[in-house]
Image (cartoon, rainbow, N blue to C red):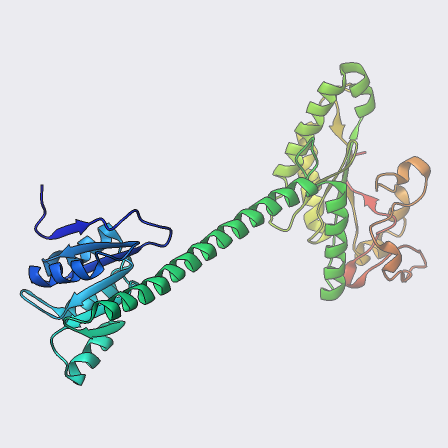
Length: 360
């Protein structure tokens, strides 16, 4: 059924970057004249809207590459309609060529101020009209293509960022327990150590070892052993109450929790982890006493504490003190009581010989 507000003449199969023209004019005679001017032009699709009150809706529907707009029409002021195009997101950037019988400079100025891109006096020469239509359409199509390329680039960058975040998590995670792995823990601990040096703040750390794990693993098998490690890791993860805490699998059945905070806070955290495993039979894995890195005041009060047990993984196997990442670059002052060991500022201490608090 024919729509009196819109007519379409197909002027050939649309090409890539085809021109789509929308003429808004209340006079059908003007619409027919423009249609004939464009009839012989390949790649131009022509649409005519005789009801200016439907102009924005028609433009939303057909998505023209250029709009030809009359200024004097019944019911709607042409300048108001120009402003309506510019206020609509779908038509905001579409080029608008004003077609008017008025030639006064003030009228032209008002049209440009309202959002027009060009101004022609009715009826222009067909060659000039086609040239201006193609010029403005090319500019608009190029703008659309550029915006689409930017959108695709932003989406690609977002996908790349998300992929990198996933890879980063995988690279920093232990495959069995989901905790941070040893490499990530070493990097994190060194960063926290340097922060403590810079801020002259205390630093503490829990080192956790699952007792009797080898016997449990040999008795019940690796599948049961893996599940036991996952349960231990889950309990340690629940103890990370602050965003700055880090739970890591240090290696084998050895775990780390920290660093950050004062020694008293780490003692409380260590005490909170023990009861969850208390009372289990000897053939069940349970975490050994978490090791604590004491502060300087604690070392003065308990000069032998650092010699009670070296709890960093590896140290209890070969008798040598455990080493923290980058330790050779850290300051190593002696203690006032004559004992030796790594020490940091403001209460950082025990990097080589952390003491053990809690049950053994």
